[in-house]
Structure formats: structure tokens, C-alpha cells
Image 1 (cartoon, helix red, strand yellow):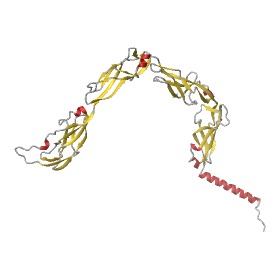
Image 2 (image 1 turned 60 degrees about the vertical axis):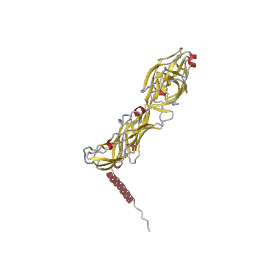
Image 3 (image 1 turned 180 degrees about the vertical axis):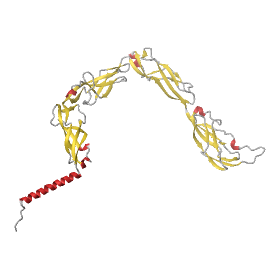
Image 4 (image 1 turned 30 degrees about the vertical axis):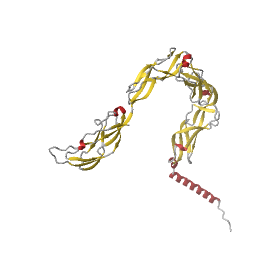
Length: 428
């Protein structure tokens, strides 16, 4: 059999038909999902591949924002966001100095064509990094308390290292640390953060020293013929019975003494005040009293101090037996019985006040207002003087039986439940 070989004109016709089919297919696709050109604004630009030994100066993050003109199918535009565009400048071939670097924009999605970037370049300034050592300077603020003197401060380390752009590093003249001596009565050791300063004393920012902290030691010594002593108030007598001391304070708590060194050395670690009388005290005491000092010794400031003494009543408790008083009973009814007819209570408060308690200022009541005949469990209520509190009551309820009142007679009987209670107290 003969093999059929297509003629040349048939091959051309087939290829033409294939091209026309592809064109028709592309047109159909574009009509269904047409390409559109739009602009996305304010795309942030970052820097990449900064060479070692260089640093960017006058740089912000991002370097700048660019507008990008894009061409993409409508379906892509429906999901395209700023995060789908990577915009950067490549510094891998940059050198020290001020220069323009082209902005590169790379889409993360397919079918996105970058048409134009405005602006098309970013201006960057690169400087060499410089490492230098600068001395640590100690700034001493205030003086130690009177009678003490400070030696020369010592910093550890004595220098710090700064690494920064050359122009910035050249500004740094010293690293300053500050210590305060206002309350220093013994050798001071403090860890401080250094502040970098230029030659005129201004602060240089944007540079971190290494190490980050400096330890400062300042020797503190007490001067000869000067000594600091605690104040000890001298008390005589006792507060009134049933009262106690709650605290004794002196202001100031310490005094600086000046005088003969041998006399100061022979003195104890405290100095007493003149006696303060406590006999019979029932309230707080505040009194200015002189210090008792040897003839050759004087106080650096005032020769007296203010002493404050707290005095308050002693807290205690007392047990009383009370007969409750009926209140609110309807005249048509009478109390048939009350069980129990006496209550034991424990009261708490200041002892001087507890000693004044009796049936005239401590009363237990049972409120039967609006109660009908029958047996009722009632919780007693108490009338107590100010400062006295109820700690315990036994029992907690009283059973009261109410019945109709008996017919009236010429001499109605006295209700045995309305008599006044007679309390019995014993101090614990």
C-alpha cells in the first residue's frame, strides 16, 4: 500500500487553522477574564544585602513608598494586595557614599506584569562603620551627709567601646555615668548605664556602648571628731492602769555629734534624751526633749529631738449574764414563758470601758412585734456602749411562748418577764 503523504498546501492550511484556533481561544479567555492595568500606591521599599562594614545613615524604615503600575487579569486583581509585591533596593554592589539605587518590585502571584515604578530609585547614604574606645567619666552629684567625706570615684571598666557610622562615632567623646552621694555613709558601689556625650557635652543618640553598664565605686570615710549616733528616748513611769505603750519614735532617729575624738569613741552607739514622764498617761504623747550630751560634745544641728509615744487602752473581754427585755408585745397578749430567761454574753473592748458596764448601758432585747400566740424562736438584739463589741452570745436564740392576756382585774398581776435585767460581769 502506498503511504499517504500530506501535500504542502494541506500542511499550511492545518497550521493556519491551528493558529486561528489559538487566537480564538486567547480572545475568548481574555473576554472572560480580561487584563486590566491599575496602579497600587504606597508600596514600602526595604533594603537588602547591605555590605559588611557599611551602615546606612539618615535611613528610615521603610526607605520610601513607591507607586507601582501593574497589568494583570481581573481575577488576579480581585485577590491582589500590597503584601503580594516585594519592593526593595539591592545594596550588594553599593559603596560608601550617597547614591541612587534602582527599586526592584517582584510580584508573588503569576500573571502580574510590572509596567512602571515611581519613583524608580531610592537615594541611600552609606558610611563605613568605625569602632573606637572612649573614656568613662564619673559625675558625682551631692555630697555625703555631714561628718562624712568621699574619696575619688573609680569606674570599672575605665573605657567603653562604641561601633557606629564614622560620622556618628567621631562625635562620641566620652561615656558619662552619674552617682549620688546624698545618703552615703559607707563605701558606695553602684552599677550605672553610661550616657554617650560629644565634645561640648551634648548627648549622642543611636549608639549603644559595650559593655552596657559601668560599675562605680566611691570610698566614704567618717571625719575625725565627728560621729553619728542613734537617738534613744528615755522613758520614766508607766501609763495609767489598763493602758499600754504602742510605740516610741524619735525625729530625727539619728544625730551627728561633733567634739573631742576620744570622748566620741568612748560613747555608746546611741545618745539618750532627757527623761519623759509616762506616769498615768491615757493618750498619745508628743514632746520636744533635749539630748543628754557630754560637755565636750555638741550636736551638729538641733540639740533636741521630737519624741512621739503611742498610748492606747488595753483590749480585753468581760462576761455578763443578762435577762432579756420583751419589746413590741401586743397589749392583747402576754408572755407565758421564756426559755432560757437569761443570756450569757462575752463583750470585747478597752478595759477602762469594760469596767463601766452594767445593766444601765448593756441591754438585751427580744422583739415580738406582730407575733401571734404560740412558741417563737427569737434572736436577741443588744444595745452596747461605743467601742464595745459583742463576741459571743449563749444561746443564740430564745424561745418565747405568747398567749392571750388574762381578763383584766382591779389589780393586774405584774408580768414577770418585764423586769429589768441584773448583769453579772467578770473580767477575763
